[in-house]
Length: 516
Image (cartoon, rainbow, N blue to C red):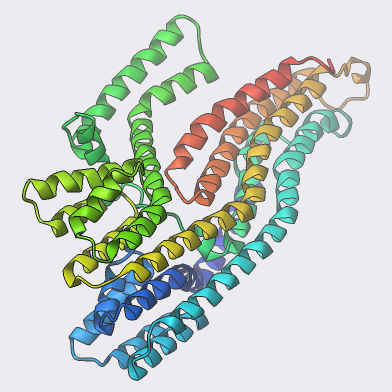
């Protein structure tokens, strides 16, 4: 009774604190996401201004790039200007909507560029300063994670292990300290909530520019479009949405059949549950695998993109656009050359250059490719000499790759701490179970305040609850690692690997018999 009261009171206090802090948290979160996109956006606008692109057109291009919160703000800015507001007032309005000093500095610099007719060099310098600030925050975060990683391992591993030992061994001397229900409550609620609280602290400390990922959102229309295109390229002409319900109906029937078949042959417990889960979730796992293939192809395209732009810059002066396309198509840039070969065939078949080039950006899930295609289309429209702009765009992409390397470096400690914890926790818990189950307490029967039946019941509850805790811990770790990778879709893949591996390590540690 008192356990439920305490949990209810704690939940009420936590809910009140969360609801009070939530608006401020979301406001700061959005500001951080906008700041993360700001350097790339400013450099892009600076490149266009150096190409003598009209200021209004540069703002419109910024509104269409990326699809993130900063692009949304620029879309609102463009709508204000089209409704009759001046560019200065629209930029001031944007600065007022976002609680960020960096955004206010960027808007002030944009106003100065517009009023004085300046080129984009000032914007590019400001973007470089912002990028340096982001890198400094990444290094500071990495230093903090070294300490938080040790705390997380101690809380997630040592505390549950000591608690399990106290439940079984301590009760033999001091009486029943906990009931089997309380043991289950501790492993299913208390310890996972403590782990989740520490993970929440890590996420809160994570700089916004390290949280951003590439590509379309999970289950978004854009992602579905790319997956459908991948299926069509492999000769499978069906839509993912149309196949989702039939696929889950089939997987449900197959998983139920497998469960009853395993039960008929005496295979129960974790093996039966794991097999049933994998069969039922197989359509979802297949979807995430296809999504991974889409992102893998886009990553290969992005890796070759700077080289293709440098090549285009060297050919652009006095070179026909069709010759430029043909040069990239036969240069061995992997999937990027394949896409330009498709453009070359379409142009020869009578399709316009602009529609063929825009189709490239639609087939690949890459914001960087969209920027490069937009630049090439602008070069085709204007016929201007844009070799310098192409080189600057290639250098911008190299800066993006550098930021990604900073991200991986800053998150490496946290990521491997979670992976190490997901493997260490089941081993330690399994060894503790091995120790306490192998202790001979028969000599303490006269002074023990717990009967042998009660001790067995507590140990059985600890084993079952410990396994449930391992699954919950694997789920928490998988979600956070996937966020650090910038791709929440990987959480399912990490969980399907870590959960059964944790249970297997727990069973192996129990069976070692080193201390029995």
